[in-house]
Amino acid sequence: MMLNKFTFVHCTNLWCLHQSLTSRELVRLLGEDRFKLCLFGTMNENLFLLGHDESTPDYKWIVGPPRSLSDVERLSQIVCDADVAVLGACPREVMVARAETGKLTLIMSERIHKTPIPWWRWMDPRFHRGLMKYRSVANRENVHYLAMGAYAAEDVRDIGAYGNRLWTWAYLPEVASQSPQPRTNVKMRILWVGRMLDLKRVDLLLNAVANIFHEPTFGRLDVVGAGPEKERLHGLARQLGLGEKCIFHEPVSPAKVRELMRQSDVYVLPSNRHEGWGAVANEAMSEGAVLVANEQAGAARVLIDHGRTGFLFEDDNVASLTAILQNLLADAALRETVRQAAWQEMQQVWHPRVGAERLVSLCQGLLGQIPMPVYKNGLCSRSGEKRI
Image: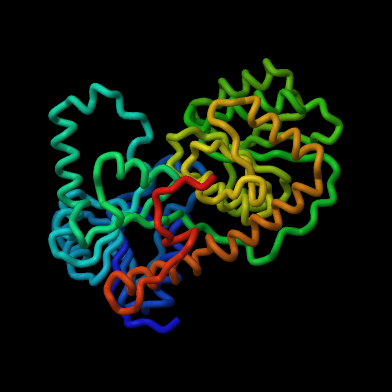
């Protein structure tokens, strides 16, 4: 890939498996001396409980997290000096200072309205002052938006931010290098992994499984994780009479999660709109588990071409989820077709290598170094439309 090199900084809160591979690819393209990953936070306890490694690699292109005010000032200067900056998690004052440089700045986030804004909030002067501050940064011509999730672009359009400077982005975990091996088992296995929170809506999955677990081709549901909803979910499984058809497991390492996905036929992501992305969606599609997702989860409408690379069910609708699972239960050939198509999609469109290459090309285009690239779908395509 030929390019006029530029200095590039990415701001985030911590070293994260779901973003680290893209960083490494950017280093490959730009060189270690032209890329910086600035960390402004520390390991989230929930990620640690789910098996993520707390340590940060000792690479010269990683800076932070800050331990003093002078460290924050140093990181801020690095951000302001770069030719291109992608701002995920960073202090507001750093974001404002960067935008005021006039240099190319891309603000990256999941949807900002995970909870619908009540009508009366629009009448609150404090809310309007907050919007004005956000727009003062977002509506500068040098500031663009990397929308993570199907509804992220809609949310910023609703508040009059960024104009048409909206681009599709995503978390990009590792994609399996080999295509999924054909599944020879007769009975269908379903998997869910995560933090047991109300927003994850595991109860929807349990209720849907209760409608199909008596079928002779149903194997079992594996539920992996821990959290405040754990006891309630155990109680619901008992109430529904799932017995040995629903097995609960303690949290496991990310590597073990990928192994479980390879051993499963279907992965269900039942999370509601509070799930800004859901990187397990990428992982499941990569490892050959057919993804069935709540259409309100951030990643769902971005990653899934319904019926081809996965399936979308209606939010809070057990019947909708049940119908999809019944269809998959009855058609092993369909499962095989979809899982192979999903893996191809992850390889060709949602791979960290593809993401880094497209992002660099987009920045080159915005800097005027090359003609603007046009991507019809996927990473760095124009954002703002739901995938149907």
